[in-house]
Image (tube, rainbow, N blue to C red; front, side):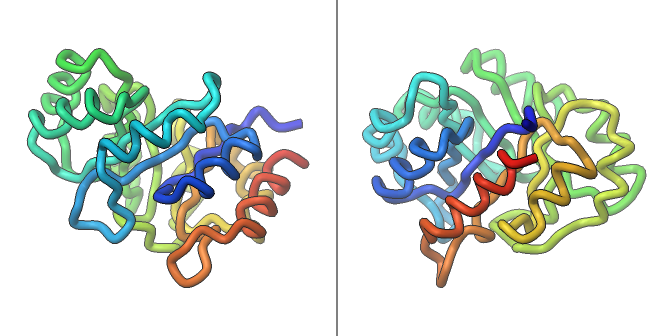
Length: 202
């Protein structure tokens, strides 16, 4: 059985969180930048956290937000981890880690070997490789991920149809899905169940 962990992202509804918990998800992602359609208010995240088991991690996702906003959200939402999905640099990462005391995940969009070098050197606690911000549903060149040389979360275009191949080929620390388990912008329970089953069967 695979050691690869599962992250459901873009969660907004109580029923989505409960289902993710029932599927033994490891990471529960909430979009806290209000420019994105899957945005959820920090106070609502705090309320939904009661449905997340102690073994699950609540992750707040931010895109190029002021440091003070991230700090405030982390406190209000009672986050366990912070995910930075924009152009944030190492200085920003250091400041967030110092002021919140929380682990930081940094998204890198791998278009070239230079991006992999940047990811390898990043001061973030964990790297997330994705094809872009906002649930693009697109897959990037997985051969780049194979050269990273550190633990990472694989995202970008994953679905129940391709996640098993991704886990077999790349053996990522975790896989992250949002739009790949949605139908018309809403989390689809049958797709979430199928996604988790595909990961766990490896």
